Length: 254
Image 1 (cartoon, helix red, strand yellow):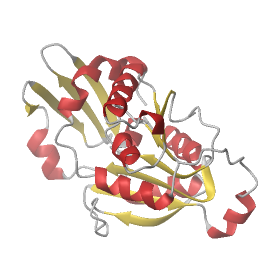
Image 2: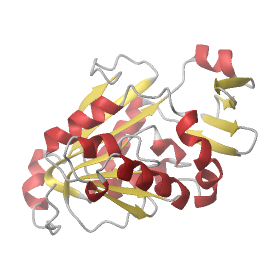
Image 3: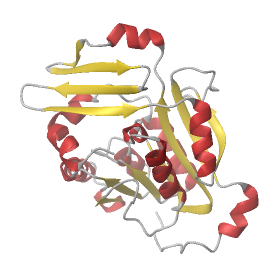
Image 4: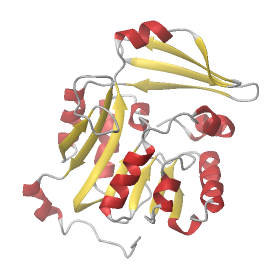
């Protein structure tokens, strides 16, 4: 993922910037409740997903590289009276500071696209897989843009929210999006690197997992080749038994 300073630089406008992104919240809350918890959320940010999960009564261990973002997440959890259910830790999602074994790891909001290449993406997926109970699941979402989306937004400054602007510079050949976000007081530029669904599936398998569902949106419609990919993965059944003794289950009941 990007370094600490990147998201620290826009922590103050992150929630207003992402205010309209709500379509994924119920999906991740449903997955968390179904798992029984506790849940590890990698790239937890300001708690946009973690706090609603905690409000549903599920304990969350949230990891993020940005102390500024985690500070806002902590404030959000306290405002919602669920601070006791949200354990926030500074760390890299490729090497998360988590010793617990859990039934669900979530990586929402396309965070894996911050990984610059397939090697780094595989490191992140493998690290997530290593946290899972034998029957645990990894859930993440990513995207690959359509030609229309690239044509309509490339190189343009758009007002995403009042006073908050973003610019998307697309490189379809390199499959890289350079996204710049700015307000009057804050600014940051980040790169996102996308893959096709078959390439993601290959990485999932290399990480020792198998895809059990691939959705095209958070309403769980089947993936039909569109822009959005929501992956639900688990250990292959044949290996789940062998993996049962590889990690210690901590006393982290949610």
